[in-house]
Image (cartoon, rainbow, N blue to C red):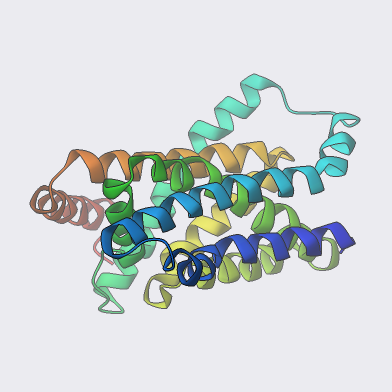
Length: 239
Protein backbone atom coordinates (compact mmCIF):
# COMPACT_ATOMS: atom_id res chain seq x y z
CA UNK A 1 0.00 0.00 0.00
CA UNK A 2 1.15 3.58 -0.59
CA UNK A 3 2.58 5.35 2.44
CA UNK A 4 -0.36 7.77 2.52
CA UNK A 5 -2.75 4.83 3.05
CA UNK A 6 -0.90 3.88 6.23
CA UNK A 7 -1.10 7.50 7.36
CA UNK A 8 -4.86 7.44 6.69
CA UNK A 9 -5.26 4.29 8.80
CA UNK A 10 -3.12 5.79 11.59
CA UNK A 11 -5.23 8.97 11.54
CA UNK A 12 -8.41 6.89 11.76
CA UNK A 13 -7.07 4.96 14.77
CA UNK A 14 -6.10 8.18 16.55
CA UNK A 15 -9.54 9.65 15.91
CA UNK A 16 -11.22 6.50 17.26
CA UNK A 17 -9.14 6.68 20.45
CA UNK A 18 -9.52 10.44 20.87
CA UNK A 19 -12.15 10.24 23.62
CA UNK A 20 -9.91 8.25 25.95
CA UNK A 21 -6.94 10.46 25.15
CA UNK A 22 -8.72 13.68 26.10
CA UNK A 23 -10.41 12.53 29.32
CA UNK A 24 -7.29 12.81 31.57
CA UNK A 25 -6.62 16.29 30.18
CA UNK A 26 -10.18 17.56 30.46
CA UNK A 27 -10.47 16.20 34.01
CA UNK A 28 -8.22 19.04 35.08
CA UNK A 29 -10.83 21.59 33.98
CA UNK A 30 -14.24 19.87 34.23
CA UNK A 31 -16.04 17.41 36.46
CA UNK A 32 -19.06 15.08 36.30
CA UNK A 33 -21.59 15.95 33.59
CA UNK A 34 -19.56 18.89 32.27
CA UNK A 35 -16.59 16.57 31.79
CA UNK A 36 -18.52 14.12 29.59
CA UNK A 37 -20.11 16.89 27.53
CA UNK A 38 -16.70 18.46 26.95
CA UNK A 39 -15.35 15.04 25.90
CA UNK A 40 -18.20 14.62 23.40
CA UNK A 41 -17.58 18.04 21.83
CA UNK A 42 -13.86 17.31 21.70
CA UNK A 43 -14.61 14.02 19.93
CA UNK A 44 -16.71 15.89 17.36
CA UNK A 45 -13.81 18.25 16.72
CA UNK A 46 -11.41 15.27 16.45
CA UNK A 47 -13.61 13.53 13.87
CA UNK A 48 -13.94 16.71 11.82
CA UNK A 49 -10.18 17.30 11.88
CA UNK A 50 -9.55 13.62 11.13
CA UNK A 51 -11.91 13.79 8.14
CA UNK A 52 -10.08 16.83 6.77
CA UNK A 53 -6.68 15.17 7.23
CA UNK A 54 -7.81 11.92 5.59
CA UNK A 55 -9.44 13.65 2.63
CA UNK A 56 -6.27 15.69 2.16
CA UNK A 57 -4.16 12.52 2.21
CA UNK A 58 -6.53 10.89 -0.29
CA UNK A 59 -6.41 13.87 -2.67
CA UNK A 60 -4.08 12.08 -5.16
CA UNK A 61 -6.66 9.29 -5.46
CA UNK A 62 -9.46 11.79 -6.06
CA UNK A 63 -7.42 13.59 -8.73
CA UNK A 64 -6.64 10.26 -10.42
CA UNK A 65 -10.32 9.37 -10.38
CA UNK A 66 -11.19 12.59 -12.20
CA UNK A 67 -8.98 11.58 -15.12
CA UNK A 68 -10.92 8.33 -15.57
CA UNK A 69 -14.47 7.72 -16.71
CA UNK A 70 -16.90 8.36 -13.88
CA UNK A 71 -20.39 6.89 -13.48
CA UNK A 72 -23.24 9.23 -14.35
CA UNK A 73 -25.29 10.93 -11.66
CA UNK A 74 -28.28 8.82 -12.66
CA UNK A 75 -26.24 5.62 -12.31
CA UNK A 76 -24.96 6.67 -8.91
CA UNK A 77 -28.48 7.50 -7.71
CA UNK A 78 -29.88 4.22 -9.03
CA UNK A 79 -27.22 2.08 -7.38
CA UNK A 80 -27.46 4.08 -4.16
CA UNK A 81 -31.19 3.40 -3.90
CA UNK A 82 -30.73 -0.25 -4.84
CA UNK A 83 -27.83 -0.50 -2.41
CA UNK A 84 -29.97 0.61 0.53
CA UNK A 85 -32.42 -2.22 -0.14
CA UNK A 86 -29.57 -4.69 -0.66
CA UNK A 87 -27.97 -3.69 2.65
CA UNK A 88 -31.25 -3.99 4.54
CA UNK A 89 -31.94 -7.38 2.96
CA UNK A 90 -28.46 -8.65 3.87
CA UNK A 91 -28.89 -7.28 7.38
CA UNK A 92 -32.27 -8.99 7.67
CA UNK A 93 -30.88 -12.39 6.66
CA UNK A 94 -27.95 -11.97 9.07
CA UNK A 95 -30.37 -10.95 11.83
CA UNK A 96 -32.55 -14.03 11.31
CA UNK A 97 -29.49 -16.30 11.40
CA UNK A 98 -28.22 -14.64 14.58
CA UNK A 99 -31.52 -14.90 16.44
CA UNK A 100 -32.90 -18.22 15.19
CA UNK A 101 -29.76 -20.28 14.61
CA UNK A 102 -27.09 -18.73 16.83
CA UNK A 103 -29.48 -17.65 19.59
CA UNK A 104 -28.15 -14.10 19.77
CA UNK A 105 -30.51 -11.35 20.88
CA UNK A 106 -30.91 -8.44 18.50
CA UNK A 107 -30.07 -4.96 19.68
CA UNK A 108 -26.81 -3.09 19.41
CA UNK A 109 -25.12 -1.77 22.53
CA UNK A 110 -22.85 0.23 20.26
CA UNK A 111 -25.83 1.97 18.66
CA UNK A 112 -27.45 2.56 22.04
CA UNK A 113 -24.29 4.19 23.41
CA UNK A 114 -24.04 6.45 20.37
CA UNK A 115 -27.68 7.47 20.73
CA UNK A 116 -27.25 8.19 24.46
CA UNK A 117 -24.41 10.54 23.58
CA UNK A 118 -26.43 12.10 20.75
CA UNK A 119 -29.35 12.81 23.08
CA UNK A 120 -26.96 14.58 25.44
CA UNK A 121 -25.20 16.44 22.61
CA UNK A 122 -27.39 16.52 19.45
CA UNK A 123 -24.50 17.82 17.34
CA UNK A 124 -22.82 14.45 17.90
CA UNK A 125 -25.26 13.01 15.32
CA UNK A 126 -23.00 14.33 12.54
CA UNK A 127 -20.47 11.62 13.42
CA UNK A 128 -22.60 8.48 12.85
CA UNK A 129 -24.71 10.08 10.12
CA UNK A 130 -22.03 11.77 7.99
CA UNK A 131 -18.42 11.62 9.14
CA UNK A 132 -18.14 7.95 10.17
CA UNK A 133 -19.57 6.59 6.89
CA UNK A 134 -17.05 8.60 4.87
CA UNK A 135 -14.11 7.54 7.04
CA UNK A 136 -15.16 3.89 7.15
CA UNK A 137 -15.75 3.59 3.41
CA UNK A 138 -12.39 5.18 2.65
CA UNK A 139 -10.64 2.87 5.11
CA UNK A 140 -12.48 -0.43 4.64
CA UNK A 141 -13.54 -0.27 1.00
CA UNK A 142 -11.11 2.07 -0.77
CA UNK A 143 -7.96 1.06 1.10
CA UNK A 144 -8.39 -2.37 2.72
CA UNK A 145 -10.77 -3.98 0.22
CA UNK A 146 -9.08 -2.25 -2.72
CA UNK A 147 -5.61 -3.44 -1.67
CA UNK A 148 -6.83 -7.01 -1.11
CA UNK A 149 -8.73 -7.01 -4.41
CA UNK A 150 -5.53 -6.19 -6.29
CA UNK A 151 -3.90 -9.36 -4.88
CA UNK A 152 -6.82 -11.80 -4.65
CA UNK A 153 -10.35 -11.95 -6.04
CA UNK A 154 -13.58 -10.18 -5.14
CA UNK A 155 -14.95 -12.84 -2.80
CA UNK A 156 -11.79 -13.15 -0.68
CA UNK A 157 -11.18 -9.38 -0.59
CA UNK A 158 -14.81 -8.61 0.27
CA UNK A 159 -14.96 -11.34 2.91
CA UNK A 160 -11.74 -10.30 4.66
CA UNK A 161 -12.50 -6.57 4.56
CA UNK A 162 -16.08 -7.21 5.76
CA UNK A 163 -14.72 -9.31 8.64
CA UNK A 164 -12.35 -6.51 9.69
CA UNK A 165 -15.20 -4.01 9.30
CA UNK A 166 -17.34 -6.12 11.66
CA UNK A 167 -14.60 -6.63 14.25
CA UNK A 168 -13.75 -2.93 14.44
CA UNK A 169 -17.29 -2.12 15.62
CA UNK A 170 -16.58 -3.88 18.89
CA UNK A 171 -19.62 -6.18 18.94
CA UNK A 172 -18.36 -9.66 18.01
CA UNK A 173 -21.77 -11.15 18.74
CA UNK A 174 -23.16 -9.10 15.83
CA UNK A 175 -20.21 -9.73 13.53
CA UNK A 176 -22.48 -11.38 10.95
CA UNK A 177 -24.70 -8.30 10.65
CA UNK A 178 -21.83 -5.85 10.29
CA UNK A 179 -19.95 -8.13 7.91
CA UNK A 180 -23.02 -8.65 5.71
CA UNK A 181 -23.35 -4.91 5.23
CA UNK A 182 -19.62 -4.59 4.61
CA UNK A 183 -19.89 -7.24 1.90
CA UNK A 184 -22.71 -5.30 0.21
CA UNK A 185 -20.70 -2.07 0.38
CA UNK A 186 -17.75 -3.82 -1.26
CA UNK A 187 -20.01 -5.11 -4.03
CA UNK A 188 -21.39 -1.63 -4.65
CA UNK A 189 -17.88 -0.19 -4.76
CA UNK A 190 -16.60 -2.69 -7.32
CA UNK A 191 -19.82 -2.66 -9.35
CA UNK A 192 -19.97 1.13 -9.74
CA UNK A 193 -16.20 1.77 -9.57
CA UNK A 194 -17.05 4.70 -7.30
CA UNK A 195 -16.57 5.00 -3.54
CA UNK A 196 -19.35 7.61 -3.54
CA UNK A 197 -22.07 4.95 -3.86
CA UNK A 198 -21.21 2.92 -0.73
CA UNK A 199 -20.66 6.20 1.14
CA UNK A 200 -24.18 7.37 0.23
CA UNK A 201 -25.71 4.01 1.16
CA UNK A 202 -23.77 3.90 4.44
CA UNK A 203 -24.83 7.46 5.27
CA UNK A 204 -28.45 6.66 4.48
CA UNK A 205 -28.53 3.58 6.72
CA UNK A 206 -26.90 5.41 9.64
CA UNK A 207 -29.09 8.49 9.25
CA UNK A 208 -32.27 6.40 9.20
CA UNK A 209 -31.07 4.60 12.33
CA UNK A 210 -30.42 7.90 14.11
CA UNK A 211 -33.83 9.30 13.10
CA UNK A 212 -35.66 6.13 14.20
CA UNK A 213 -33.87 6.11 17.55
CA UNK A 214 -34.81 9.73 18.11
CA UNK A 215 -38.42 9.33 16.96
CA UNK A 216 -39.47 6.23 18.88
CA UNK A 217 -39.38 5.44 22.58
CA UNK A 218 -37.54 2.30 23.76
CA UNK A 219 -40.89 0.53 24.16
CA UNK A 220 -41.95 1.50 20.63
CA UNK A 221 -38.62 0.32 19.26
CA UNK A 222 -39.02 -3.05 20.98
CA UNK A 223 -42.50 -3.52 19.52
CA UNK A 224 -41.26 -2.41 16.10
CA UNK A 225 -38.35 -4.84 16.28
CA UNK A 226 -40.69 -7.72 17.06
CA UNK A 227 -42.89 -6.82 14.08
CA UNK A 228 -39.85 -6.60 11.82
CA UNK A 229 -38.63 -9.98 13.09
CA UNK A 230 -42.00 -11.53 12.23
CA UNK A 231 -41.96 -10.03 8.74
CA UNK A 232 -38.40 -11.24 8.18
CA UNK A 233 -39.36 -14.78 9.16
CA UNK A 234 -42.22 -14.75 6.64
CA UNK A 235 -40.23 -13.19 3.76
CA UNK A 236 -37.05 -15.20 4.24
CA UNK A 237 -38.83 -18.44 4.87
CA UNK A 238 -38.44 -18.99 8.59
CA UNK A 239 -34.74 -19.87 8.64
